[in-house]
Image 1 (cartoon, helix red, strand yellow):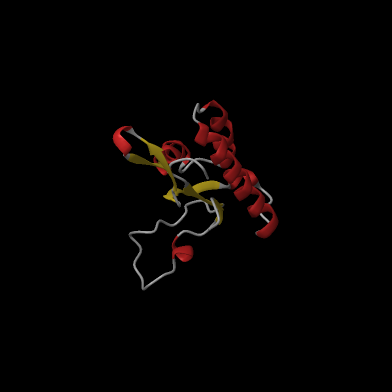
Image 2 (tube, rainbow, N blue to C red):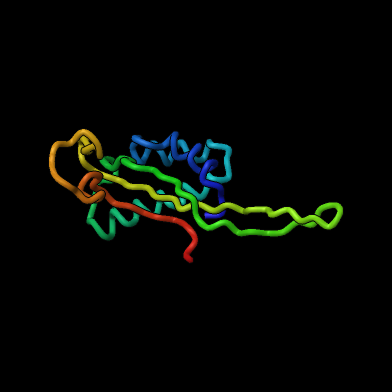
Length: 133
């Protein structure tokens, strides 16, 4: 997504741990450009839950993880005085939203046991939005 990860995290921090229906009601009132992009990724995660995992009751879905990682930066050059040039970086981000319908989702830390894959630690449905490349 063409939004810096730091700005996307400001929106995602407000949604983490909330129900999906509550998050969809909050997003239109967040006055940031990243809120529109986060809403698209959240709706994609809901559609993935319905289609791929046959989740029928969307009232039980919660946002377990909401992550904004850095994506590739588009670099542009701006000419400056005395023949110098400054690099302008247009930062992008990879948005990941993981949904779960468990009553008490298991947390990644604090579990006793051997090596587990990340999907075993945080079960749910994930949707990623970002640039391919």
